[in-house]
Image 1: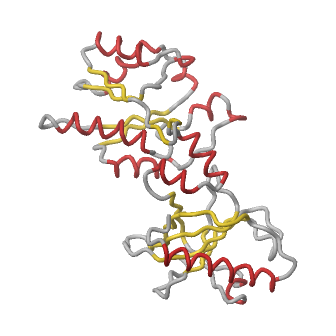
Image 2 (image 1 turned 60 degrees about the vertical axis):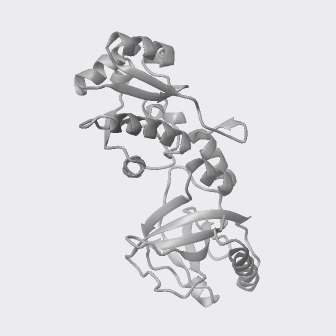
Image 3 (image 1 turned 90 degrees about the vertical axis):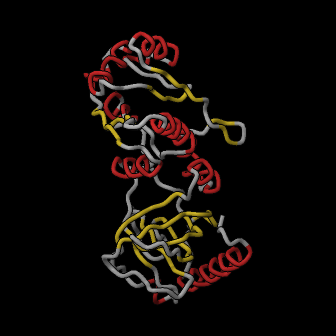
Length: 295
């Protein structure tokens, strides 16, 4: 799936890129699925993804892959025998020279195929196989499921370390109710509905407008805003800490989640909320002054 395009995924892709670069006219490609197999086979227990397909394709190209091939996953496809995998790839890509996977790669009906199966099939069909050892962090393999768990816990240092870059959300600014402005902390409201959500709470962030390289320091709240409204839909709000050109409604922005500060909570009054926000802002400003990376 390459969900998240983490450091383990990147290592496999870069190995393929390196192999393709050795000969003129060779290209590197990535095979991914859509939808996630669990959504087809176990819809009631489907895996919630870190990113939608369009973002996955964007990040796969960003690593350096020349093309991304999206295989539609269906119940019919799930029934294909593992022995048919390499011939099917050769049917689509007759000049296929090598296949690059992680050492834990499984494929075919009932996940019956593994790296040994794939090596035998590749050899029979004249294709090289390269199986890369899994990337490890803190003694545990880097995986999309591990990133999902860390994200839900608010462990942004762990998430960002496994991704190799800050976890980033994107969206278009919309007009809000102006509560933050009344409290002295105007916010940018960004509708955002991921399949899997970060822990509700306050974050240190960096924001940039789409097509801009300038990062602006900020503090964000992601959650239900229990002090100011009774909502069941999370909202992402960002208060910028630097005086810059402030994005307005309709502007597209990207926000990097760098550090989780505290869980969201309900305050007894807006005055109590304002006092807490002042403390949050002071803490973030202190952190920025002592750590230029924000990590």
